[in-house]
Image 1 (cartoon, rainbow, N blue to C red):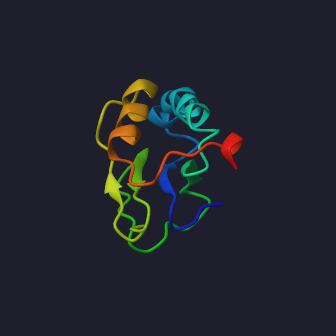
Image 2 (image 1 turned 90 degrees about the vertical axis):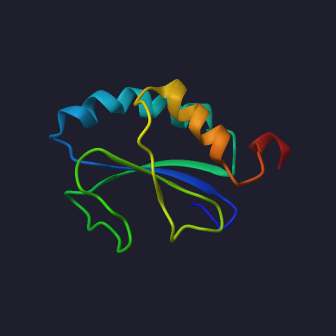
Length: 105
C-alpha cells in the first residue's frame, strides 16, 4: 500500500508479451533494490486482466510509469533503458519522497 508521500514505479504488462517477459527479472531487481524503502513502491499490473485506471496512457506492453509522491494523477512515462540499473538510477534521480527504510521506523 502507498500513500501521498510515496513514489511509485508502475508497470502495465500482458502475460503473453515477450518484452514483458524479458523485463520481469530486471523489474524484480528494481523492486528488491527498494524493498526496505517505505517511500518507494515498485508495482506491476496485468492490464489484460484488470481495467487500466483513467488517466493512465497505456498504448502497448510493457508500459512503465513513474508516479511522483503527491502527484499520482500526473504519471510520467519511463522511456529509459529496460535494465535494472537504469531504472534504479531513474528512481533515485526523480524521486520526490524522502528516502526511508523499514529499519528506521
